[in-house]
Image (cartoon, rainbow, N blue to C red; front, side):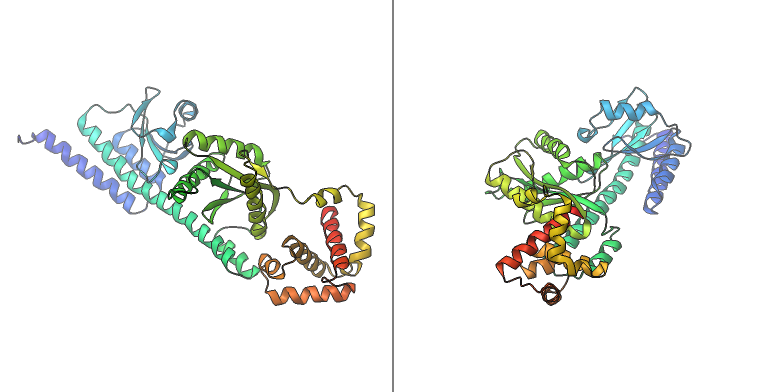
Amino acid sequence: MPMPSNSEAEQLKKIMNDTLDISKYILASKDDDEILTHIANLINCDAYIMNVFGRLRSYSENAKMDASLFESVIHDLKLIELTEPVTFLDKYSIYPLKTMDKFTRRFVVFSMKMPKDLSNQLLIENMVNLLSLENMQVSINLNQVRQRRNELFNSILTQNLPENAFEDTLKLNGLDSNSMYKAFEIDEINSVDTGHHQEDMHRVNDYIYWYFEKLQIPIILISWHFKPFILVKTKKNLLPLLNELSKFIHENFVESKTQIGYTDDAKPLIQFKKLLREADEALDVAKRENILKPNKFIPQQVEDILSLVPKKEADMFVDAILGPVLNLKEDEKDELIELLSYYYADNQSISMAANDLFIHRNTAVYRLKKLEKLLNMSLNDVSDSEQLRMATKLYLIHH
């Protein structure tokens, strides 16, 4: 085997030293802008990092912000499918960084054509590999955050956690219990009776995350009974979004046949159990009736009819039934009406209502007995209970 010449040996030594220098920056957890600036100085060009949507994430100091680059990448390059380096616009080199899945992949971009010189090729490949190590950690951290959130909400669903403890836990996880969310639930029905259903649903989860991140709409995904339940932080109508999501999944996961149930009624995050129940009910209807388009949760017809009652007449009925409750202090009044609302929504199950409201069952029993005494009515009396149900629904419709 021939020995390298002195000049070749010097080049290899420089490449090794430069690679070691960059690796120290990455291992020292320097931020991406600082790492890119160091790389740019070594190879005398601008350097950028963009995500799989073509959005700029980091760049070297004094790098030129070329709008044509980012606009063209978005329109002309399908980054989600890009696995090999390419020269773009005849003046940029784009290298995909290695990652665990294509949905979280990032790309390093150099303002230069791909080098033909083998030594420069080796240096850039080494740098890309080093940045890939960091990119793998970014992906791991992202997946860990998603897994922690999934475990958090699963624990709430399986345990009767007090409301204040849930609110504190949300805050620790960077979430606001009062933030408004809508929700949907999705199931991949081709593989339900096979051993691949859970694996297929994991793949669908990836598409869901990618789709909403592209739209820059925050979501929380909870795996519940082998189905993804998704909380969507948006004021938009969900139907157009879900139609596009369904189309996107089918285009990229052609063997998939999905059904979706959703609720378009936004609620605070603290009420996520109610959102789950509504989305789950809508999905059950879709599966039972073989509805392939996203199916919206529709409340019982009686609520639709009650919404037609004029406010003046509704208020007269509500005052006649709930008058003593409406005269209580605001917090106490809201507390009792909210309990009644959940009690009837949960088919008059005190345990389920207590669980949804993050209170002990004994607390719910105490409040309901207090309400019965205050109104001189009985929840066990069919007539009294029906009047209370109607009055509660009318109050919530008009207030």
